[in-house]
Length: 134
Image (tube, rainbow, N blue to C red):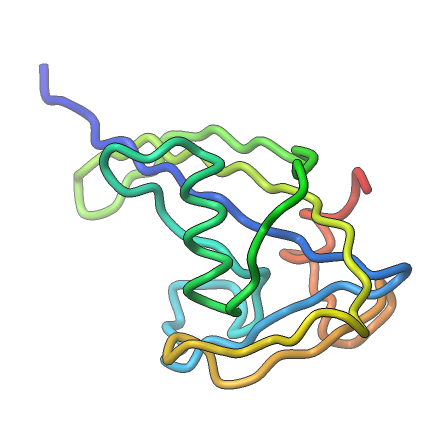
C-alpha cells in the first residue's frame, strides 16, 4: 500500500471587534480560491501546531502571538491530485486583538492587507466558512 502524504496547515484569524485581518497573496496561484486569505501556513518538521502558528504569524505579518489562541475550525480530508493522495489537515485559530495596537508588516509572500467585516465584498465563501463559528 502506498503511503499517503500528510499536510498540516495552521491559520491565524486576527479579529478586532467586528473586523478580520486578511492578506493578499503576492503570487496568486489559481489553485487557491482567492488571492485573499487569513495568514498562516504549513507545519515544518519538528514543530508543534502552536509553534507553527507563531512562526507563520511572525513571518507573514510580523505579529508576535503572546496569548493562547482559540481553535475555531478543524478540517480533515483526503485530497487527490494527479493520482497522488494526500491527507490534508487544517486548524484555524481565533486571535482577539486591538487593530489600533497591531503594526502589520508584510513579508514578500503578501502584497497588501485589509481589516474587513463579515459583510465585506472581500469576505468570499472560502473566508466566511472559516469564521462561521466565531
